Length: 277
Image (cartoon, rainbow, N blue to C red; front, top):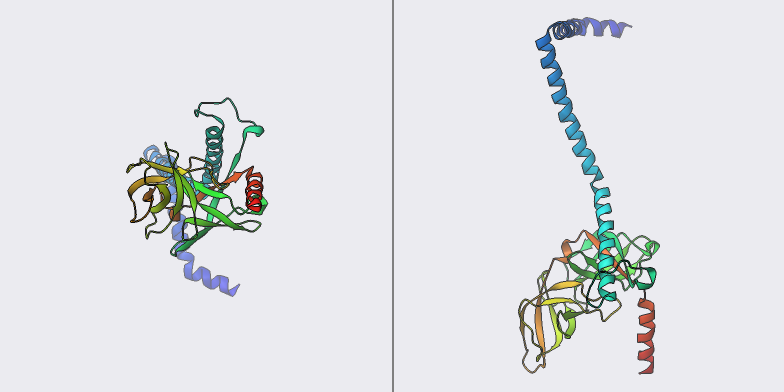
């Protein structure tokens, strides 16, 4: 009680002044039309600004949900494109793709962590065995190839980037029957080398390089890049082709996992051929 009295003695005059100010302000706004309109307009303006800022904050926190939704839609579109290319000789339109004509499924994922400043670069993505992901699946973006899955846990997978000394991808020169092995033996994140293309092949700078489809990892036609230069090393019968990549795989934040539905059958046949040899 004593403390309350001391508080009132110390701050009572200030409280009374503020109360009288509020009463006077209320009377002015209530009984004067012009002041009332100014007050209402000011309140509306301030409320609009607050609502706008609140909306921006909500949109920011909803951004991940929106991006996930877009990524899911993109994966469905990429899946259709991949399977259409395989089951139409001239890439013409089909009314539908049923379960019997699907060879690939596409699963969207986000990058959880990166190691991209070494010679053996890799990323970790937020999909694992719980989502049907296994090693030896290809990973792409809407712009081109990213790498291959080498290990999985229940919720995560490790992806060896194409920018890795151990990576080898089968790639072909579009519009021709020539293909070779794509390796990263440069110091740039935007270029790789294509080997084993015979020197009699008719190639030009600017030709498109894409996945060949001659493995269980990637379907045919996934974009890799374009030929920036080529030469024939002394004593070799094959070109060494420098490929300018369509994108930098180390900058990827959202990816798509390629699930080959018939990969196991293909591997069984390949292994049976090895046994016969």
